[in-house]
Image (tube, rainbow, N blue to C red; front, side, top):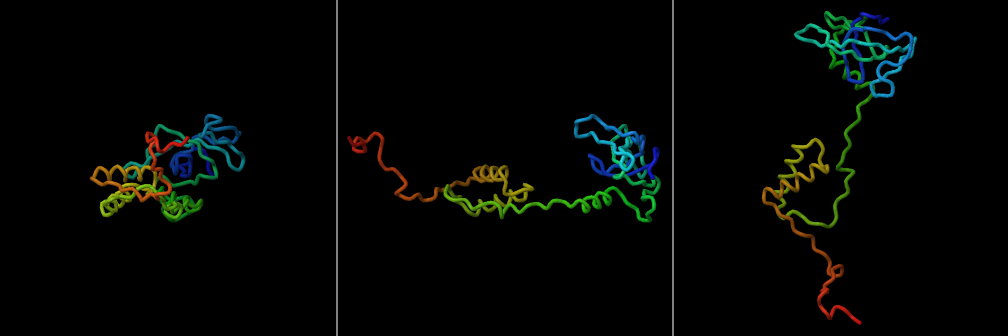
Length: 190
């Protein structure tokens, strides 16, 4: 059972934190500014909100910071400040391991395969130097986390042109092109 003064670790809106419980809201209410993303509702007796003074590890020693944060009782676990093991467990657990456990419990979203979503383009123009264009596209894939994307594609066009690349137009069918002139009197009929 967590009580005021216990060293705990747990998930908050800021991620995994370690700290000392300063107050447990057994009376209920809201911790933080109501109506903001940082407000949490205390739900006693099973899940009251707690004010936790954040501690940071410095050279193997836990030091208090100037910051407190709200944490729900059920999201916290008592930890041993001296050897950083969780109470009633023999294994050591640092914040990265705890975060990995949390991520696996909620399931991380997989990055979508954008190549399957993007339809091949039709019409327009094509790069005149396909080898240079391929090198620029590979550079974009190395440079950007998401390729293709609007930003990455714009960069490819600018970089391809900066390196001297040009584009050639796709052939356009004759039937779709008007060949008359606005200034040619033969093009108008009465």
